[in-house]
Picture: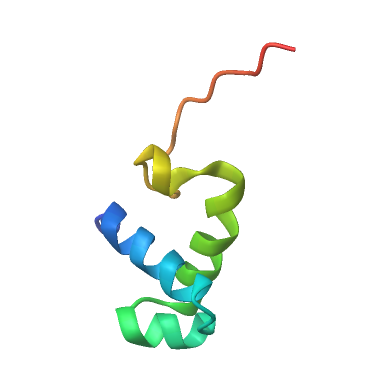
Length: 67
């Protein structure tokens, strides 16, 4: 299995797409797959993985919310 992408790359990809560029152009610019860009952008607002500093494809222990 390959190594996870660095958090800095995730942040740069999300910022590039938020500037108005397409997912495909972001994939070409950062030399990653379009699927990686789609998943990264889709997960970032909901799960805040960039701000939390973990990779979206690494298994994480998540505590159940106390409701």
